[in-house]
Length: 263
Image (cartoon, rainbow, N blue to C red; front, side, top):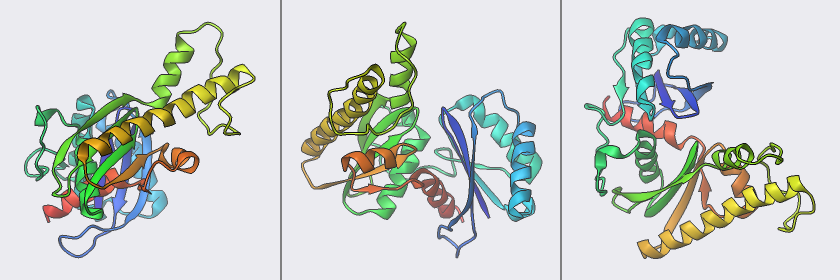
């Protein structure tokens, strides 16, 4: 089995893939997440993960491959310790030989591309034909363009909606903390403070995405399919219809595709 680990700024996601035929990608059998903390040791990860494997009835010896993507460099060492000490494996690290991305990265500083965005591009090109825009809702919201040949052409980094809300609440004296949700009506004229905040954050974010995606489509100049992933993708898809497809496991599947190339 393959254990894929996606270490983001907010959460670390662990996904267990079954073993398919050689060179193919298996199906996700289980997924778990834990808050990202660069101070968490390999031993602490192990205590948590071993219990979850036991609940699922998975023998840790059944895990024969591990691949890691991280945008938190300080977390990588402890995840490598987890792989080495508890699974007796040397993990693949996305973007580092031998698990190089294997795609053209047509930007000024290719090495600065985040591993999550790179594996999203790999998975999106493998699953969907033509030119693509991948929107990933994480701590930041990223918009990435992948051309029909699978080359990464660049993108946009915007503050995530929760970051925007935190900034609004944290820098004002009287505004309450609210939960991110779709407004109850399509009206953009709120009649109380909470509704006005929700309208501003939610519909303001929709307007931002609509505007940026329209500009990106125009710049690409060819038909483009928009793929959304990340925790809030479904919420915005239900309310706006901006996206052609919502693919919640895109990052994990990108890791599995990258690992399959090594088998």
